[in-house]
Length: 504
Ligand code: HEM
Image (cartoon, rainbow, N blue to C red; front, top):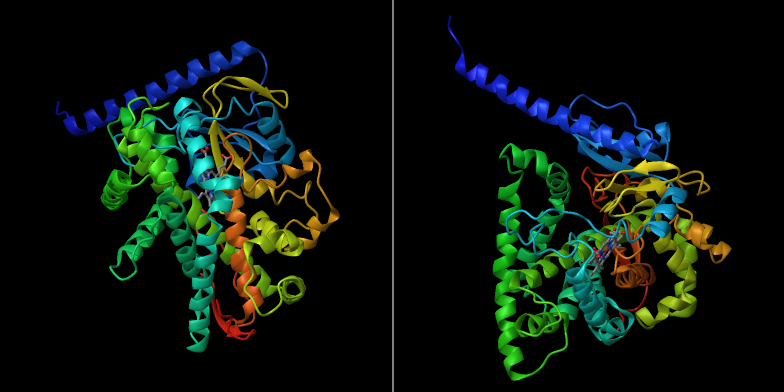
């Protein structure tokens, strides 16, 4: 008898893998049944991979939205044998964020290797504990809290003037502007100046290199999510996903940030500084620091600030400007408000924003229809009950903010861009959780105030100072694939000055 050893080996391997899955599936079921009440409803799934194909689809938020509109706003999904609860309505989101906030305040990303992104030194993926609390305190006091934002107002005003001058230059040359690219420059420069007291040099090509890495980082987000979900089963089989791409971006950032750290340390030897990088370096050097941190902790924090802060705000600016361009009545009303409060002889400033409520509604509506992070991911630390269903411990929570903010039960004409909907006055708390572009609770976005300033002042400048020409009649609003919500056809507009050149 001849034996094909290769086939035989593959068969045994497959059998082992399958029995491992069956075993854990079976034992999980027993554990769940013990509690005596039901898991949330679960839509039909595929053998072995479960509902993985929905996450792999090019527009995962839309695929999941379709699933929830068919099977309900609270669903129990399975990725191989890993449980996941999907939330797609304001009332389920309200219950989870209000009654279970502490339970879901971790994103249990088990650390692999040492990349700055998704490695053991991350902040965004850190469990809720002493390290996260220590870093969050520094992040708020040194960069993102109200007092820190007041201290850094001048930096953002300078960057806004630079942005205006660049648009004016393009207008004079009758060139079109790639809105997202131009906004990204302003945001990266502002965040760098605010957090490390310097921006990257355009002349040496360093700035372009950092922008390129941020774009690559952004393209990696879907892969990072998959790594986090599939890490355990694939690690068991000795497969490491996307490691090469993740390490490439991580190593490049490492080199750039190490240089900036050394520069900062040399400066700190001469005089004490007060920005986020100074504070982190102080904690790194201090043996008695409240929490001992490493150089990788510092670098990871900056990589995550670039990732979390840049593309999110730039994409929102692009989508909102596209909506305004397609809705001339909204543009007219917005312009009337800005002209009456700011006039035409000086540039809008962030201190004008509280006097521009319509601009605020336009920004909110842009975020509602086009949340740059449509899926918010957390982990249930303990088992609990949600809307009468049992959720086992260590279940991954995915809140589909895209679906929540387009839910016809909570929103009238959910697919339409209607900033006026926010005119109706203060919403009560339950209704406010319909708008969750920044997430919610302890792990909600700490950069929401800064993001609102970026988006408000940039949109304000574009509307106040220029008319905009598009190619064709309407901007195409298709979404590109990926986990971040980006435009399939990046917005390109040609500016025409509508004020006399502003002097600073
Ligand atoms: C339009 C702009 C932005 C949007 C829509 C956005 C959205 C989000 C969302 C949905 C989360 C997860 C929240 C949750 O789990 O509940 C998050 C987390 C985070 N965001 Fe933002 N963000 C924006 C801008 C910014 C900016 C400007 C910064 C800082 C410069 C920033 C820093 C962070 C950080 C550090 C986290 C992780 C917080 C933690 O894990 O504790 N974001 N953001």
